[in-house]
Image (spheres, rainbow over the protein chains, first blue to last red):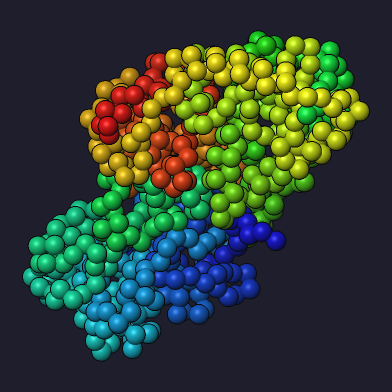
Length: 275
Length: 341
C-alpha cells in the first residue's frame, strides 16, 4: 500500500515535564507502547489535536533513545496552548518524520562540534547533542553555548547539569540575559558570549535560536574567521502538508519542510531573504 | 483519426454517459461557462473557455482527508475515502490540458499525493482544439499549441464534423468505446484548421511573451527588483488570480467539528492572503508586496528552477480577465524583463 502522508497515526502522551514557565516537554509513544517511527537528529513531526490544529515540531529526543520520542514545546499559539493544558494519557495525532536531518553521519563525523542555542532553540539541537553523546567515539570535542532570558527559562537544565556537564569532552557554557540572585554563571547575550569564549575555527557550528541571536552570532563567527560552509541552522516556517506540496514554507526554489529545516548558511545565501 | 457528424454530438455524449460520468463545459443559469455533469439536453458552451479552470477534477476546492472520532482522551482515525468512479472530461482546452501535467509534477512527486493520484487515474481527458484563441491567450509562450492540445484523446470541431484522435491508452479505450458512433477518416480537414488557428494565435497581442532570463540563476536579482513595490501597489490581495488559475496548487488543511466528530479537510489557499504564512511567532511576508512577489516568483522562477525549466503558467489568460485591478502575470513579466536582459 502506498504511504499515506496526510493521514496521521495515534500517539499517546506518557509523560509531561514542566521545563520552564512556558515550555513543556511531552513524551510520546504509539498505541503499542513503542516509538511511532524512527527519525534522525533535526527532523520534525506534525502533531495535532483534531479540532484544534496541526503544526510542525522538532523531535527533541535523540534517535538513540529507543523507547519514546520527546517534543519540547513553547506555549505561544492555539495548538500549543491546548497541548500545555492536557494531561498524561491524552492521545494526539502524529505523522512524520519530515525534512532533512543534520549531517551527523557524514559532514559532522569526526568533527569538533559547537552547538549555539538560545531559548527554546535548544529543542531541535538537543537531538543532535544526545545523538553525538551516545556515539562519542565518532565525533571530536563538543562545545555547547546555551543562553536564555533567565535561569528559569533554561530548557533541559537538569539534563544539562546531571548529564551533559558530566561527560568527557563535552564543554557546556550557559548564560542568562540579566543577573539573578541564584545565578553565579555567565550573564550576557549569546553572540557576545561566543566571541568571549573565542572557540577554535575548527569547530563545525550548529545554531538555533531567535533570529536576532542567529544574525549577530553568525556575524561574530564570521569575524572570528568561520566560514558559512561550517555553520548549520534549522528553520521554522508555517507548514501544512510537510511534504513540499501545500506551498506554505516555500523560500525561493526550496521548501523548508522537505529541503530543510536544516540548512547550511551558504545554502541560505542562495535563497531570497524571506524567513 | 475518427470523425462523427456534429449533429450526433448529443448521441456521443449519451453513449459516453451510459458508461461513466461525463463532464462538458456548459453555460450555467447565469450564463457562465463551467464544467458540468452532462445530462440529456445539455449543450456545450459557445465560450472559448470555462470561468474556472478544470483543476477541480483532480484537486477539488475542498476535499475531506481524514475523519476523527474523539472519546475522552482517545482518538480514532478514519480514512473517509470511497473508490472514485471513472469519468470523462470532454472539451478541455490546450492550456488546461497542460495544467494537469504541471499539477502532476507537484502531486505525483514523491511522496505521492494519493488523493490526487486516485482521481487522476479515474479520469480521462478529451481535449478540444481552439479555433479562435482570444486576446488574453498566451499559451504559445509556454510551448502549448492550441490547435493540437494534450490529453488522453483530443478533438477538433471543423465544418459539420467532430474529429477525434487518441493520445494515450486511456484515450484509445475511450475511442474504442464510441467506435460505433464514429468512422475512420483522413486528417486533411484537421490540418487545414490547425494552420488557420496557428495563424490567428501568431497575431495575438500576447503571443510569444519573452521570458528569457526568468530562471534560477537570476532568482535573487528578480526577487530584489525595485519594481515589485510599484507592481504590487494596487493589489487587493483578493486571491481571485489564484482561484481561477489552473496551476495554483497551494492548499490549507483545516479541521471542522461536525458535531459527531472532526473532519479534516484541505481546501485551496492563496499565497496572496495575509495569513498564509502567519505563525504564532510572526509573519515572514508582512505586506502585500511580499505576497504578490511570491506568487509571480513561484510561477516564473522558483517552479521552473525545480522542474527542468517548465513554468507554473499555461497562458490561459483567466487572471488577465478576472483581476479587479487589471494586474497580471504578463505585465509583471514584461516589467521585470528589464532586470535580467
